Length: 154
Image (cartoon, rainbow, N blue to C red; front, side, top):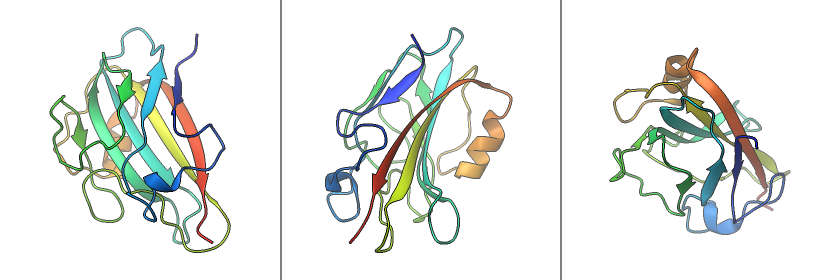
């Protein structure tokens, strides 16, 4: 089997339910994954929107997810350090944790949830940016799984 990322709330390429957006409750969707490669020591998750007017917009940065995890439940708290060991970074809204889709009115934007299987934990302080995490994981990625959803405000 392959390292895959999915959600019970939306299929790949489909619309992200309003509950997980700024027009709804703005809580993170449930995500689960299968079959990380041997040697995985931790995971990192980045969610971003490459269709944002000013360039790629970061919605969620979460790292040092324990290697034995296979599920993030809906509504991950927006705290720097999570009770189960994960650490959250700062999104482009300037907040810690998840910030849901909130595009300007118009065509649907694409939201990529990317999960990286890493050969070591990142060990960055809470509040790291997407760029800091990507720089730190360079050379330590064993595999990457992706789930893309869409959202439009009419």
